[in-house]
Image (cartoon, rainbow, N blue to C red; front, top):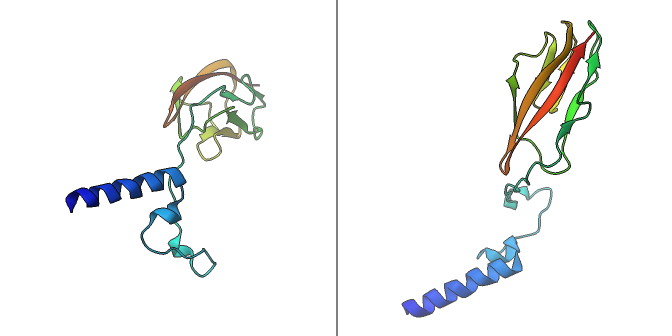
Amino acid sequence: MAKGFAYSTLNFTLFCLFTLSLASCSKAKVSPLSPNNLSTAETFPIANSELKNCHFKDPNPTYTFGQTITPNPIQCDQGVARSVQILNPNPLPSGIQFSSNQLSLVGTAGERVTGSPYRFYLENEAGYVVLKMLLTVK
């Protein structure tokens, strides 16, 4: 009896792996989704790919003192950064912030700086990368 049970469990598992269909892997009948029946849906995290060719849209931005800056987002050819930290020097000039929601520099430049170097540490589940930027506020 135990041998038959193990064999059928193995067959069921292999069937699930090869079909890649979550609905066929459940032992209960799954009804199609409808606006009134959304509770049957399951979500699973999607694996993030390695960060490749990441850079700021403008790696050497120049902003004008007292004016709202044009957002300067981080762009990657592959992968999405899940966390970003400023490595040095910290903090950014007054009035300029890094928005983790937009993955971009935002704000109003409130301090003059000339060619100030900044390094940003980007990380996701697949790895990390360090970006460099020279920031100027005239």
